[in-house]
Image (cartoon, rainbow, N blue to C red; front, top):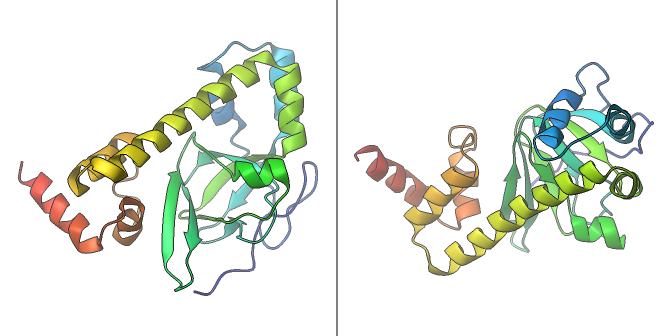
Length: 219
């Protein structure tokens, strides 16, 4: 598989390199603000501080936020678009771990916190507007903006719940039940994600996904 050389590689306040530049005109901060205020209360001073800690960036379809083997630099909040995280095995086969569409976060938290190389690729399925935050800026907000800490914790709980449901379903659920759970977790992605990627996420063949969709369409 040929991998693009374009990937985000800057810190807050810098312009991103390798073809992906911070997009000042469409930062998506309004989406982040709505996300945060739905989960906690904020003063205007806290919101002003939060806005200075994120780097707005636009990632074009098939460009990378992160590649395996590099140390993760950012967590990303998706204001618009869709990303995926995945691994590639020794035979070159992709295994999709999760998707991140609007108002989801995506990051390799182990790499971010430990400084060790990541095992994961993260790239964009669509042109996407992101808000990036590095670990130092994130810790500053957790310590100085209680609402941010509360909202982020609720976001982590949503991710943890989705992860737990997927683990349980991979052990005991049928392929159709896993597909229905995908629709429940990512309701906007059924028509946006290519069928082979959905099949990879579910751990089934593309033909199985087609068969499930035909069966459900007849109900």
